[in-house]
Amino acid sequence: MGGWAIAVHGGAGVDPNLPLERQEEAKQLLTRCLNLGISSLRSNVPAIDVVELVVRELETDPLFNSGRGSALTEKGTVEMEASIMDGPKRRCGAVSGLTTVKNPISLARLVMDKSPHSYIAFSGAEEFARQQGVEVVDNEYFVTPDNVGMLKLAKEANTILFDYRIPHSGYETCGSGVESPLQMNGLPISVYAPETVGCVVVDREGRCAAATSTGGLMNKMTGRIGDSPLIGAGTYACELCGVSCTGEGEAIIRGTLAREVAAVMEYKNLKLHDAVDFVIKHRLDEGKAGLIAVSNTGEVACGFNCNGMFRACATEDGFMEVAIWE
Image (cartoon, rainbow, N blue to C red; front, side, top):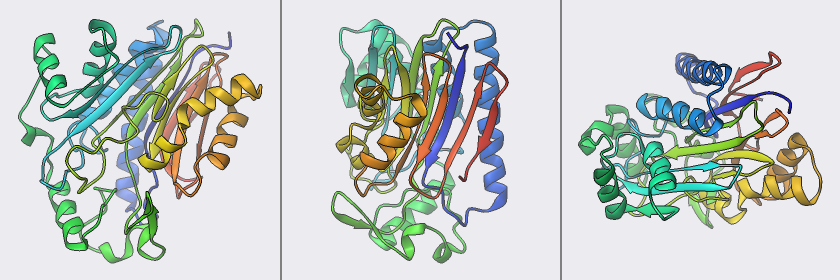
């Protein structure tokens, strides 16, 4: 085995005009979460526990779009989703439509460990959370003033907004889609800058794991489910690798993006970096997305086809990177 490796992301499709102070805040949060994972791996904590720990930290901080600070639905509420997968036996758990669960990733872990199912959603997931005794809060806990402002902008523009951290002032200069509108599922959108959080880890035993969590799209229809809770789309882990995706959920779903990385490694005998490059170039069609991945030999890789991706990664041999742009 090649030692442990870890990667963390805070979303792909970063606005090119994002203020420098916001960029620095993002890098600081990514660094803190990366160091949390590194410390655990040095203490021989299993990969599946590390990805849950790191994503919980990301969910608790309102900076990115997961847990507290999640994007708002068209009704001004929060509906969160998450998934987690343990590579060695391909065990997994996923949840959607959460409105009161403080840490969705931990409920996904409980679905994997404590239920006979792989995926529980909406009222059933909320009931399961209470049966398991997880921490719940009022929906207002997840709503931030920034998100309320961004929902207002989205409604005024009659569109879906992805980046809830675009500053309210100077909005006309923000968003790559303002000058060149993109499409989602064949329909136009005005601003493209999605943010989801995720973590992938391989430990010293060569065990891979992946976890992804999100609040979804700003001004999304209630009941909308994206790629993040879908095993094989937004999250996947097996004996070979662990993958977490971020970006245009509908494109990620169509391309079964996370599973494709493992598939081309297995069937085309590609190394991790080559597999990630192949999938980003050939499986997204016109969609915009990114992903992070680790292999069972201690490799770490990331790829994206948009402006940037909030990311941080490290390996046991001393490599470390925290970056946003290419």
